[in-house]
Each structure stands twice: as structure tokens, then as C-alpha cells.
Length: 409
Ligand code: SAM
Ligand code: TMP
Ligand code: ZN
Image 1 (cartoon, rainbow, N blue to C red):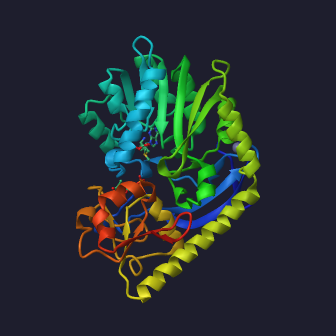
Image 2: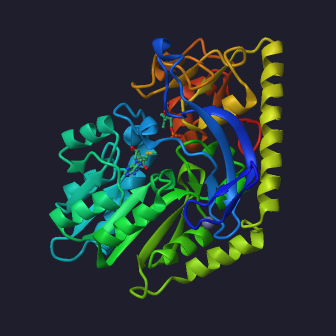
């Protein structure tokens, strides 16, 4: 095995590296002043399996380091995402949770942003959420949660206690789980014969098309395509029966999986897989070209930030996102170019961004006299943040975006 190869976590094939972001910190550990020397670092490199085409990280961060009691990401922080999950829940309730006493399990239920609607509808439910703090927040809302990692053993326990699930749902979580084999065996143990396993995650097709390379970080172990999910589902006795492209988080796909032979796959499945082939998404050269773009955009951003600073402009960051770790640490951007970053999340305020140690300030302090420019790391919430901070642009401030490339808006 070459130094830039590993073994596929799913099929044992050879994973060939196509991009190396170098030494990176945990993306969701925002150190306090006293914790600055307690960060965990790893090599963030990404590759594709030559056999099953699954795109995956070459190095795995131990799960307990990422999903801790104080995991800082609270899903309910965005209004748009609250709406997205309410409508997702309504759809599952009216299409899949229609039998007598249906049961819905959510993997990675976080602060209960989706299950709240399921509970309001009086549907039996259970969240499986290892991060204790967000699990408590959802419990306080009257949602049933088990503080645990979803894997085969957890699934078997749930099946024994509660019986089979009609829906197993997950958003922005399945791509976080390297032990996908155990997840599929768990789904096999828990899902009813006609149940569905539905999950949505950032889509490799969008990441390559929109150059949203900062979606690559420790937690996003897999970057799925319809083809790689289709192949994986089959391996475990399931079938990918539907795909739906979603406009959230810069472009995701919702995959619906059923037991093999129970449902007829929609035409969208074949169409998306064919589109991926046309685009060469399973060719290493396509992914290497994407890597070259990443390099170009990062260096361009650094030189534009230097230029603005040298011209005397005051530039800050906005959105202390997990995504920001990738670009800041890869491009070596620190407080000399961005003195601070603003964010609305109470758990992040007063702490520092991972690796770069840029201080995080409350979004309430983002007010006149405004900076000249704000670099938006939470680009996936552009409309919501632009509306919230309308006074910034009204008073002459400008937003800077860096995906798909540097742009002042
Ligand atoms: N579903 C929410 C959403 O889309 O906003 C939360 C997404 S958050 C990025 C990922 C969540 O998955 C975290 O709350 C984390 O604790 C949880 N998680 C990580 N590994 C898990 C596992 N093996 N089983 C269940 N949840 C897991
Ligand atoms: P995400 O990109 O992983 O969803 O993280 C979004 C981050 O941006 C999170 O730390 C909260 C922050 N944020 C704001 O500061 N203001 C806002 O209006 C929104 C929607 C998010
Ligand atoms: Zn593989």
C-alpha cells in the first residue's frame, strides 16, 4: 500500500487520495483561553475507493473526541433549517408513518429539530444522539432520546424494547459514521419489513460543482454519491429506491433505502447515477481537477485578504462554522487577516476558532460602527444572515464569499 492509500471502510478496496488539506484540528472543538493547547490534530486527506467508488477520509478521528457532552452544534439555530425539518417531518408523517401506532427513529437527532414535529403529531419516536448536551436540550422539549451512538448493538436493543421501526431517518449524520457496516446491520435489525431508511447528507456532485471544499472536515467522513450509496445499500441487502436533491447546506441528496425487493426504485435513481457517470464523478482525474481548483481558490482568498488589509480595510469573519476550520487551517489564515468572527451560538461565543484561534464574538456585537467587509463562513445561510444583518450592507458594509470562488456581494 502506498503512503497516500488506505483500505476502504466498506468494501476493503484501495482508497486513493486526491487531496490533502494537511494537519487540521477538530472542526467542532472551539477552545477557550485555557484550552488552546488541548486541541487534537489529524491529517485531513480525502480519497476514493477504486472498487466501490465511495469517497472517504484517509484518517479517522475517534468518535468520542468529536461527539462529546459539549458538542456545540445546535441544529435549531437556523430558521431555514427549522422549516426544512418541520416539512421533512410532515412528509414522513403523511407518507410513511401512516399505519397503526407507527414508530420513527432518528439517528443524530441533535436538539430535536426534526423529532419535535413528530412528537407534536403524537407519533411514537426515539432519537439516538451521543452528544449529551444537545440530547438533554431535546429531552427538555419532551422528545424521547437515547444518549448513544447508533450502531448494530444499539439498534438491536431498540428493536427489542420498542419493536420494528417504520422509518429510520438521519440528516447530516450518516456521513459522519465511518462504521457504516455496523449502521447497515443495525438498520437491518431495527427496520420493519416495509420500512424505509431515509438519510440526507452533503452531495459530492454539489461539492465538486460549487467548489464547496470546506464541506470536507473531520466529521464528514464520507462524501456520498447516488452510485456509492446504491452499491453500499446492495452490499447489505438493501436497495436505493429514491433520491431527491435538496437545496440546503450548499446541496444535499436525500436517499431512501428499502429492503431489497420491497419497493420499485424510482426513475430518479437511475437518472442521477447516469448523470454522475457523465460528469465523471467516479474518475480520480475529475476529483484531482477539483483539488487543483481548491488550491487556486484558497490562495486567491489569502491574497485578496492581504490586499484589503494593506489598503487599510477592516475585515472580519461571520459564522463560526465547522467548515471554517478547513479553509482557515489549510490557507493559514489567522488573526493578522481576520481579527475576529461573529456568531449567534451561545456555546461558541467567547471561545476561539479551531487551529487558527481567531476569537468568536457575539453576533449582537456586530453593529455600527461596522467593519468594511465580513467574510461569510456560513455561506449556506447567506439569505438568512443577510436579512438579519441588513443594517450592515445598508451602511456600506460588503459580504465576502469564497465559494465557488472569491466574490464581494
Ligand atoms: N440531524 C441534525 C441536523 O441535520 O442538523 C444534526 C446534525 S449534526 C451535524 C450530527 C449529529 O450526529 C450530532 O448531533 C452528533 O452527535 C450525531 N452523531 C454522530 N455520530 C452518531 C452516531 N453514531 N449515532 C447517532 N448520532 C450520531
Ligand atoms: P452550519 O453552517 O454548520 O449550519 O453552521 C452555521 C453557523 O453559523 C453556526 O455556528 C450558527 C451561525 N449562524 C449565525 O451566526 N447567524 C445566523 O443567522 C445563522 C443562521 C447561523
Ligand atoms: Zn470500497
